[in-house]
Length: 249
Image (tube, rainbow, N blue to C red):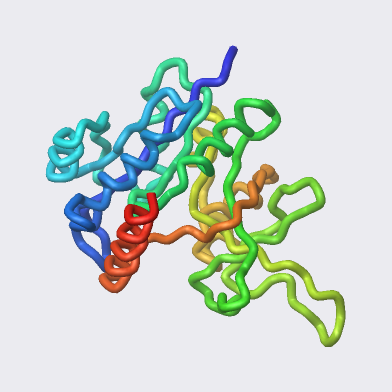
């Protein structure tokens, strides 16, 4: 069966720090529209769907031409919301979860994840990471670290600076995890049935559930860190980047 990939963008209204975040105006458009427009540029995917539990977000998404799926209001995470939509899709073998607060998501990165999964049936779950830059704070718990094996699969994700560097030993490369995930539809539906384990709860990192259950996560390396909208101050940063991008294009 040939691979058929859907990009699903979970968007909930009840954000803790920024209520109504998907509708937050950035450069004259709702935040979720920027994400959808970037995902609509991705080559090799058959559908781009906004998954939401709120009619205000749904109406806005319909207004800019998106396909919309209404979901339950009881989901604990965006992954659960994506899984609800994926379960109802027919003929789709893979799903990519693009968070609804990343207006600058790189279409080429999404396409790389889709292409890697389509080419290798052994990849059940995939994500992305970039090398920490000189100015990045490796100790920042909000910058999640991932340790890789020699095959490019994740060994562990942590908010701590891992691996620990002892004395004047070998200096490892630190990789910063990016919150984009791809799954086979079959694996995603299994993933959301597993209960959160000790590591996931301790680190508050959902991807550790896969590792705790013995699954492998392929990690695609990219050059640029993701720029999301988590706080009001991030809006100005994103608008500045968008302005710069437009002036040079």
